[in-house]
Length: 308
Ligand code: NDP
Image 1: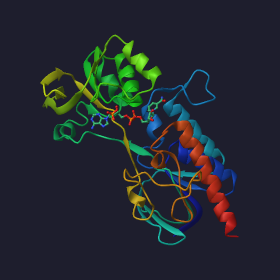
Image 2: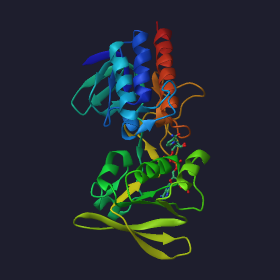
Image 3: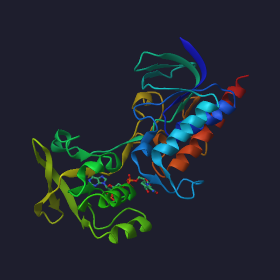
Image 4: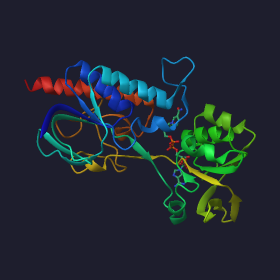
């Protein structure tokens, strides 16, 4: 079995940044990229709020650059998903979907978060046939057609705004009478003529036929039911943290976010650290994820030094 000093799980801004710092600290880190190498940023368009890029940068380009930087500094970056973890004693034992078995002195969990769905049977039936949680991945298929976006947060507004540039009309299905999104984002939505907000509405059913989604049945707060005709139905109602594989050992909150100790990345298990969206229900930004990846690598280095 392979024995290493530092294992990083997750290939997003937190994981790659941890790999950059851990490499420079001579921890010879191994990083498994997980289901979505590059993380959530690979499903967005331009990132305008990551410092250092005057004119913004594409999400995929930013992640490619972080990955290359970590590699150049010596990180061993691998494809693979961690499917089993035994954190009962150190070194921690980890298994991946491709059969790798690793013993690691320290573990940095940076597995991020995944998009939430409404949980409707019809939504599952039409997933990939008009139902999507990623406008930048799938918006292209709905050029000059009508689509709906569920949610009223920054993600929903960003998705709706992106789709408005491609589609004929974008409905936003918002369950309250306010948007949760930042004022700047709201302004952008209100000023886009082909976005219509359907306030106080919940989705009862995604409608469709053999060719895919044809519409959605909505229920207003006052009880009124009505249908809209759309070809694409996009979910943007938040995320859930990818902590399941470690949750037997590591303390999580009610929503599954890993609990860390104060300003550090330390979890309740000595030698296990958490970084990025898997431990951050609040900020969930690329730059905050990257910063917490840095903290986790520094904490891992300090922990290893304390064993000497
Ligand atoms: P949020 O949790 O902020 O918003 C989720 C939205 O979905 C809310 O409007 C919520 O409604 C709605 N919602 C949740 N569950 C349901 C449901 N079952 N049915 C209908 N609607 C539902 O998630 P986001 O992904 O938008 O944002 C996450 C974080 O990332 C935020 O902090 C955000 O600011 C940040 N972000 C920042 C960006 C940027 O700065 N460029 C871009 C994208 C995200 P309700 O309001 O009623 O709870």
